[in-house]
Image (cartoon, rainbow, N blue to C red):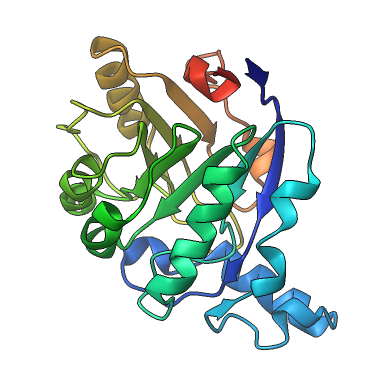
Length: 237
């Protein structure tokens, strides 16, 4: 049994292009621009989609089990990422089975198309972004995969999602947009999603209210934190 309690980011793929309303104020795009100006070689092309062959071996160097946010600076299932490179990323995740790899995509259709060609070892946990009710259309594509844990990221949440399809979903993360042009997050939206998760016994993790100063707004909902995490994220065989 492994205790993967630490967090890391692993970015064998960086860069992306905007495809929906949640992308408008992309934090990764802003960060990539800053890293480019700082002269970091990995971001010399800014936010252009780039595959980094040299990064594929990084998880093998981390001997302590980690929870690894995979491709936090891009979208692994972007159309500019070849199937061949995706297979290499999955091979690393399959072999580095003492880690938990958390993946998130907005490109749910490509995910579903290539998923049958991938080996979904239990340590690979797949999620899709659902920033509005309109984007619940991504959920059936996620459910069609053989990922052992399927999760939803409602961040930045931009509208109410009164009928969130949770059958087959194992975890929901929700958060508001942050930064100087952050769009507002309404309390009733958060409460409604929380209540749906509680009713269906789906772990609910409220990350932040966001806004210009996310530290000031915090993450309390009705006076308490909601930081539920599926137990297999922390302990798995």
